[in-house]
Amino acid sequence: MSHTYKPIDCALHDCFEIACLYHYQVTLKLRDQSIIEGECITTETHPDKSEWLVCKTQYQYLKIRLDQIRKMYSKSANAIFSEVNL
Image (tube, rainbow, N blue to C red; front, side):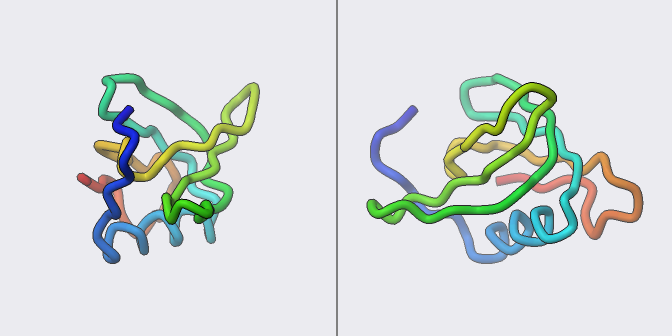
């Protein structure tokens, strides 16, 4: 993971906020090619101004830095979006 946070576009950040608001079930494809499946819970901003998605998986809560997410696919019925490319 790159150590320097690169802020994402505000419109993309809004998609994460919506996913958390409605607790969407999502599949995340990360820049390191790993895949995470879970429920979007909330976003966080850390003191270094990095932004994170808190995702509840089957076994744990994960914090994923937003600039490390490559794609987000919604698995929830009637979601506002089906795929977000970052």
